[in-house]
Length: 253
Length: 288
Image (cartoon, rainbow over all chains, first blue to last red; front, side, top):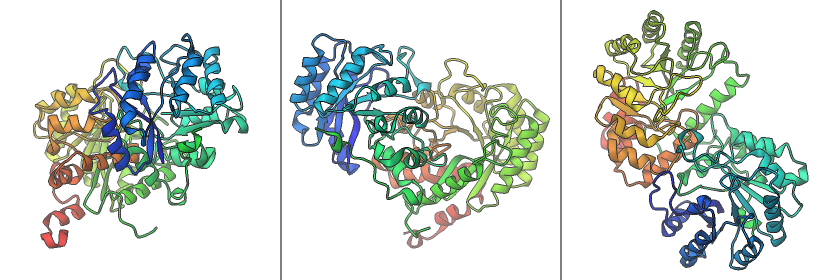
């Protein structure tokens, strides 16, 4: 099982212990995962993501058997289409975008173009709902959570679009899922790192209602404890414990 | 249910911060949620859930400002839940009604309450809390106080307190043990350990949906394992994840036992966790 939501690098609003790739490799092994799509955390707050992408590929180079780069493409930046093709040719397993940090509205034309272009190249587009709990954010961290309207707009953009939405809770997932046609729903995958387990059992409810095949494994390391998604699976009601979620590996080209 | 080893092992484990719902709490699924807590607790290996009911949970008065009538109804329900041998309970009070609060504590003690639950009905350092704390001292009851980690503004629906506020109250009542609620439950957890470091009768519980890396390390570095209580509150998967993280950060067996249950056993009255205390007093061969 692949971790679809890991990063390396520091976070601008609090110190993270050891966000380095060699540590992530050990965490992946400890958690019995097969690998990870890895983003470069500082890139979410960079205006030009190019330097962050270079740093990401360089840092992961010794670990590419386990850690696959998920670089950033900013679709309102000059030459983004060429950048996207180059990154995919260099082995990007997925592409990350941060519309909230870039001030992009749900129907931003460049964002839709990016989703379509990723779809044509066969790579998933990864969007992050949140990095931290809303209640603890730094006063300068004003981007806000990714909205359900963004996800719905991208999910409707085209039949080859593949979206991976990380860090969503039950409410956002349901607002998107039931606001899409069954065909559009199949373009959207979710990790469950931020979905509540028992006693509310939101995760169990979503497995039954939305479907286990829509969910991927994501840790949000190094921001969050990598043990959390495993704990959520382990605490499912007995009738769901054998449920098979999807492996992000199946979304790769 | 299958006969399987608990996910967190067979050593004692006390959840110092749990809640149950009841028929007057406005939730049609209240029995399902309560059953899910016990199901997950058995799967994790929780020996005791120390729980409270928060009035009507907003159904007939606000969760954090419960009316006296709702407080009493909730405490009655909680006393009934505590007939289950896995459950112990805090008596909930609203200090804006001092006479009612003191009467509820007396009534709770008579029905087996082992602690007091304070919400966010009044700021923690308000003098109105003093009679509640004095009653807790008389009865030997720890107080679990709802906390926002680092209050930087007012938040709706609660009179929120942070570690500094609770530290001032605890300083006035050194005979009372104060459990600072949910270090991972919202706000900036990094603010709390230094805010309470020098007030030794404040003990954070580790509950809350937050599982930020660095939180446990910071609490352990600043406060040490003897000051921390394991707990879940509203999300039990995060509780299990934190237990597994404690195993990974290099604590000794004794330090893990402190956090799992021994600190709680020290804070609450002797004899209220008999299945834990049997382990503590058993000869080594029997423990192994």
